[in-house]
Length: 50
Image 1 (spheres, rainbow, N blue to C red):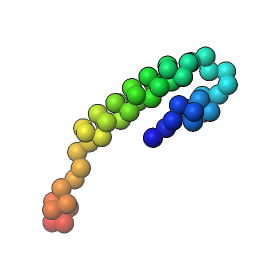
Image 2 (spheres, rainbow, N blue to C red):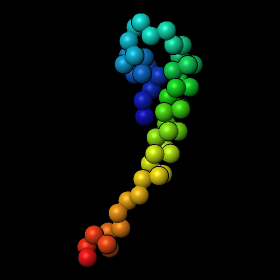
Image 3 (cartoon, rainbow, N blue to C red):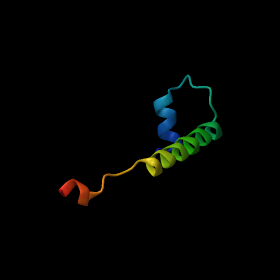
């Protein structure tokens, strides 16, 4: 999981976001990632073996 500190490093020194704003952004990204993972349909291993 990406920390606020690492996110700040990646965003650069000129990023005007506060730590709280970065944390909010990271929470939103995690929620989007959770939704994406939940909606991915994995192939049925039994169907692949046939």
